[in-house]
Image (cartoon, rainbow, N blue to C red; front, top):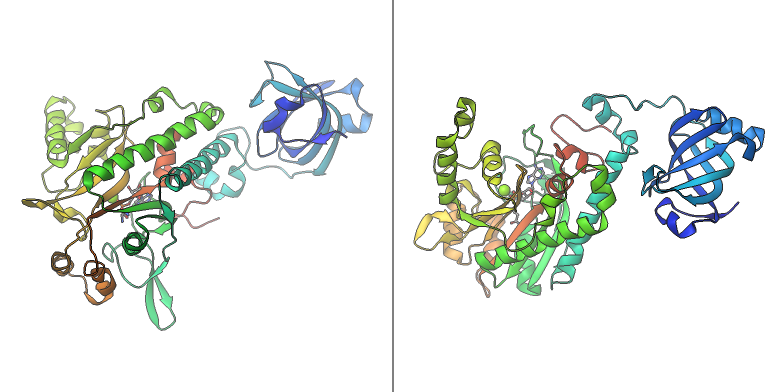
Length: 445
Ligand code: 4AD
Ligand code: MG
């Protein structure tokens, strides 16, 4: 038995005798030759069992081993450019094979399965190479987020998940029983971030976020992960500069470190390579005019109806898709109508019907991945806005205090991890970007 290695490190063991601990991914029976595709969590490699090279019992085990059985394989690593696998290019000439547990008939076979079946079997589906690749990209996105923020003066401070009040209105809150009181699962950590920046300057929270939205779209989860950076002494323009640096760094890190996974997903990486600062910036007004032009240009009556839009509304998914298709990079849309955004957004100077908000829309039709804004710094204006939104003042007492003791212009944003991963991976639906998705009709497994 050779040294135990991981498949991702296989190149370093060329010519050596090694041992792999893994599972049977797939198998091809060629009579006296058995080709086993073995995965170990870090990659997939082909192991070749030749009848004349192994004891009869070992050959019999190889011939009859079932899909997803756990096994330990020993043999010699050979470089072979034709060998399939991830990273590929190497195979093992097997000398010994031990089955740890022989799997029962595995429900997920190479044939096509419906999405509901796969979601019911999510605990097993995770082993499929496509799911594996997406979740490896996710892990890299999360690390790239932390690396960039940690190296740009941001300090990570966790914000509470059990919260007493609604930050952005109560309609999308999950209520929980908090002893004799009501509490809500956090839908943002932003308000607490605003307290934290007055002590630390630049902060971020990064955690699970809950939205009781009855939306059944490919972009909505009820539980998702959001990173929220917040910056003291920062206006809307400075915020956009931070966002474009941040997002570019995440994308470039994935291109560098997850090339094999993106290839497996058949992602067109040329579209991602150009994601570098600066990003185009258009105002909400310009976006509305652009939608109108696209609507005038199209011959397709269905598209004309879909693109219908009136100033003052929030963009729907068809609008975001049409807008982002006009750009090769993510695009900032700033200055939304005050009425469609949260109460805490700073009004546009001289134009109170518009606020200093900015959304970042990902290209190729992926839509909003970031929402952010400059925040109201003046206590009286903040109180007025809370009242206009029919929110009670009492729970916001501490939040208003922040404007009484050394208030400063400040801004921040929230980036949704799953939407970002869906875009980078080039996949249709965000349910595949989190190990166990929570959606309107999905709480199992
Ligand atoms: O635009 P949102 O609602 O912004 C906020 O919550 C602000 N308080 C953030 C801040 O300024 N600190 O959400 C931010 C991002 C969206 O752009 C999107 O990427 C993601 O969170 N998001 C969702 N992702 C998956 N499923 C949902 N239901 C989501 N809702 C928002
Ligand atoms: Mg938003």
